[in-house]
Length: 279
Image (cartoon, rainbow, N blue to C red; front, side, top):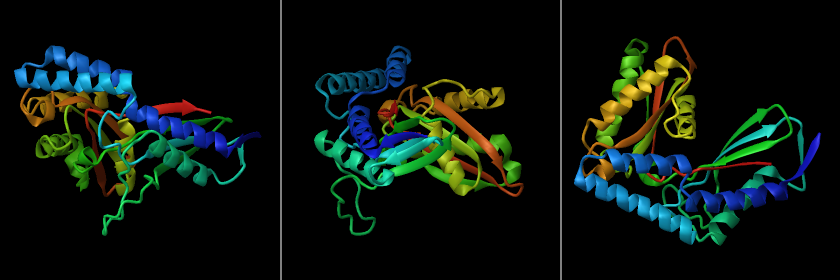
C-alpha cells in the first residue's frame, strides 16, 4: 500500500482551482482560433476575436477568464492500493477549494438555494469519486458556471424514440438556449443508465479533448450530425448570429433499463475550463 498524506491533495487542488480559471485549455483555444477562420458573420468574427483576446489576457496576467468562476466540480480516480494518512480526504479536498478560490482571487459563487446567502468559500465542491487499480490519484478540476449549467436538461425519452429522438432533443435544447450559455459552446450528451447517471455521463463527456470523436462509429457520426444541425440554426457566437454556435458535441452512452431511455444535455460555455493532475 502506498501512503499519501491528504495535505498533498489539498495543495494540488488549490493550484488546480487557480490554473483552471486562468488558463483556457489548448484544445479549446485552438478550436476558437479555427472557428474564427471559418466564421462567416462579421459580428461573429468580432465576438470570437474578443473571446480569444480575453483568454490571452487571462493567461498572461493570471486572472480569471470569466467573472463566473463556477462551482468547483471534481472528478477523482483513486487507486485501490492507496492509504490516506494525516486526516480526512474529504476535508482535504474542501480545504484545497477554499484556499484556491481565496488566494486566486476567484469569485465565490456557492450560496444557500433559498436565502441566496453566499457560503463565502465556494464549498462544498461537487465530487465524483471512482476507485481504479493502482496507487495513483488522478484529479480533474472543472469549474462550472451558472449560465451554461442553467441551460442543461435531463429527460426520459420513450424507448422507441431511439437515436433520432436523442439527436432531436439535443438540437432543440440548443435552439431553446440561444445566447444564454455564452456560445460558442461544447455540448455534452449522456444517454443510458438511470436519470442521474445520464446527467453524469453528459458532464463527463465535456472532459474529452475537444472534437475528439467517440470511438463508436455510430456515435461519432451522431456527434457530427448534431454539430452541423446546431450550427445551421444560425445563432452564432454569443447568440448574435453566425455559423459557430457549438465547437463540438461529445456523446457518451451506457446500457439502460428496457423500459426507459434517459437522455441528458450538459452545455459548457466558451470558457470550457478544466485542469488535470496526477499524484
